[in-house]
Amino acid sequence: MQCRDVRDLADSFLSEQLLVETNHEIVRHLETCPDCRADIVARRALREKIRSAFVHAADLRPRPELSAELAAKLRPLDGQISRRSVLKSWWALAAGLALAAGGGLFVRGSGSRSRLAALAREAAGDHQNCAVKFNLAERPIRLEDAAQRYGGPYASLATFAPPPAVDGPLQVLERHSCVYQGRRFGHVVFRYRGALASLLVTASTPPVAPELETDDGHFRVASLPAARYLGFVVTDIDSQQTLRLAQALADPLSRHLA
Image (cartoon, rainbow, N blue to C red; front, side, top):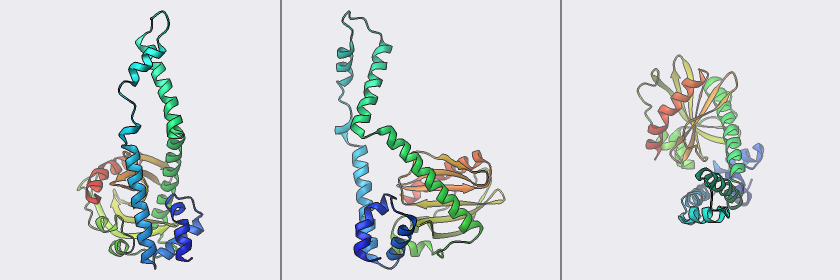
């Protein structure tokens, strides 16, 4: 794959719309091309700024007088209307406005959950093939090397110190950056409650708060915010213990990566 091809596919790559094989080709190219890596980093930063600007845009918020206008327009001719009726009408109309203005708010919410679920499966696969079986197609590299090549959270993750106790001690066994299914992760492997556990951080939109994503009977995966990155905790212990571990890691990890 040439630089021109990578530039043409860059936005689709960042939107996770490409086939796994194409992702692999782009990742291989980025490992040897600093110019394309810099372009990808700049595009990702621009996308994050646009998303943040949209979310916090004051012009997209409802006007303060909108509630009074709606109440006046929805009032029956006899002047009798209950507070509950106004609120029900307001919420019904607000939902419609949100769908019209936002291009399908609830569809996007469903898409976000589907994206997180797919990434959670990749995180579980990385844990199994990297931490458990050592069966990755591409050899892991040091976090410091990943930071020099790709930027991102890797340098900070190399110095992250987990909380001293989360229902039991966390013993760090390994830190590196690895690739699974074309996606690069920062990977910290722990010994936790007598089992292997993984903390995986990747470049994607994080959830608002830790949440259990998958429980396939073998691995449990919880997502967590890692500053502006997406984090996952993968274990083979109880679901609630996995979620509590993610909750305990979320704040200190976000502060450290920020």
